Image 1 (tube, rainbow, N blue to C red):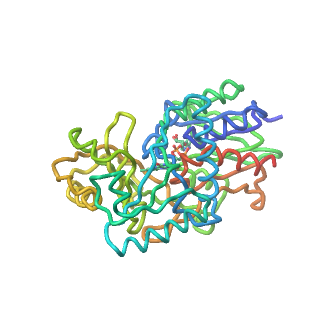
Image 2: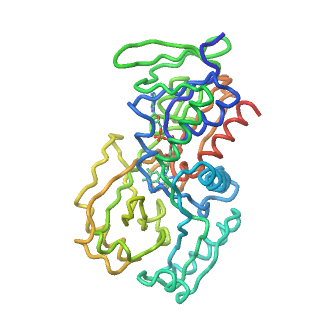
Image 3: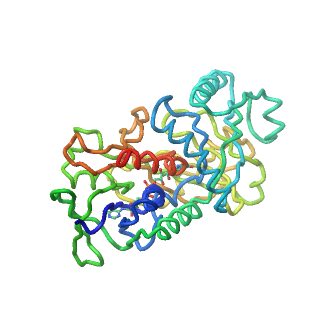
Length: 371
Ligand SMILES: Cc1cc2nc3c(=O)[nH]c(=O)nc-3n(C[C@H](O)[C@H](O)[C@H](O)COP(=O)(O)OP(=O)(O)OC[C@H]3O[C@@H](n4cnc5c(N)ncnc54)[C@H](O)[C@@H]3O)c2cc1C
């Protein structure tokens, strides 16, 4: 009999959402986390936006799990008091060419089942009088959420059902046994191991490294992750009231474009940009040298912002499975049965909208393992 029925590697929002979901019926579950507390990596370094599901390829996991996850999030936030606000969003076209592009975005979003409205210039300026616009898409179901509040909820739910969350515990090896796996961990330099029937790899930036521990060839499978840093600049408080909802540009290439984000402290931030970290070194500092480029991107949508109105703020790193310049790829959520590793689920390339999708991802993983 293995020590645990289920082991989840990684206590970010996705690992915790899965733990909260599975532990009700499978309480002999452990979450192992290398840091001193849950949620210290990508899950606490993002825009905290509840995405509506507008941009993703129809039929993709991102489209489906974002739309489902968004509805589940609003329901659970309302029921359990997780701080959130349906603040709404505008995607503004700043010239006639962009107008044609927002029509395509509108069609994509409605195909995904998202409620959207096209607004002309006047109607847009009524909502946001300070932005640069010739017309826009209005998304009534976009919101913001406290990522920490959500993780606290998932954590306490899992623990209340009897799950264990073990911090300071880095997974350094996974070996197959008959009917399960041996997990080797490093706790403060001390090595030990335990056995488990099922393994869920929710290790975020290191999910490809964990997948390689069970013998997956990262290049051949497309599981290799690239790090794409996203930095934010904060706007001076005297100009923080210039917008009252999330305002996005028409995306230019990778990412959604530097956009206006309102955070829980009432601050107005702009970000994230996209910067591939070719050495894969984790570095969260925000370079002052980006100020000029940031201010120029912001002025595209909010002309009143001067270079000196913004200051470097925070950053996060997205695990991407597409190389720089390649089109976006879908989440990879795979039960590795066909690769001969029954009971192992890998979650790779869990970039945005991973926070929004987290409750739906948890249900999807449950179906893969127990459906
Ligand atoms: C700049 C930016 C903006 C974003 N904005 C949004 C947004 O507005 N809305 C949205 O829906 N999504 C957004 N996202 C995406 C979202 O943040 C992620 O999809 C989500 O947080 C991923 O959660 P996770 O649990 O997979 O990863 P993580 O939070 O990274 O958690 C993984 C955990 O695994 C642990 N771990 C790794 N290796 C090991 C090991 N060997 N042993 C033990 N533990 C290990 C790590 O310490 C970490 O705690 C954004 C992302 C970024 C970077």
